[in-house]
Amino acid sequence: MNSSAIEPIETNLAPKPVGPYNQAVLVDNWLYCSGQIALDPSTGTMIGNGNIEEETRQVLKNLIAVVEAAGGKNSNVVRTTIYLTDLNDFAKVNAIYAETFSEKASPARACVEVSNLPKGGKIEIDCIAWLGDEK
Image 1 (cartoon, rainbow, N blue to C red):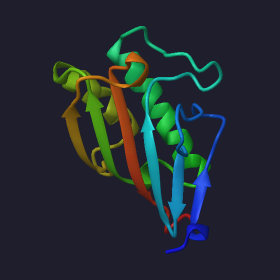
Image 2: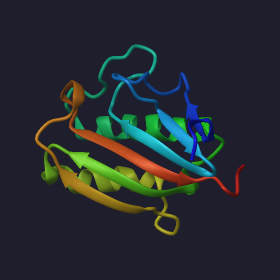
Image 3: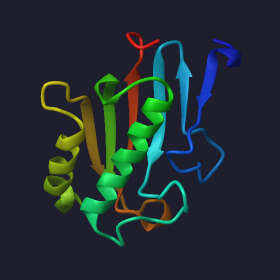
């Protein structure tokens, strides 16, 4: 694969990257989304003040905005990884996650506890989406 086959995806509806990476890259019909934290795209500040429910809603909003910028929707997401600083928040995150991904079309997923996340966030989510039906 040559680098011209990799298309960077960028949207103002999700936060700008906080490092040297793209919000997502599209390779053929596969979309690889970088992890999103609970940053407000317009201000760059963290949302939720440590509230896991508010952070989760913002993270999912940011993530789906990137998927949509590539021409997809939440039902195109085939795999997610959730990073939590406290696995005791698992049930709260699941309840909000279910608002974005229906049980019937819920992607495969991994969830891990980590010691720290950028900007002091409590949650980060990344994903892979198949856009073959959309492109």
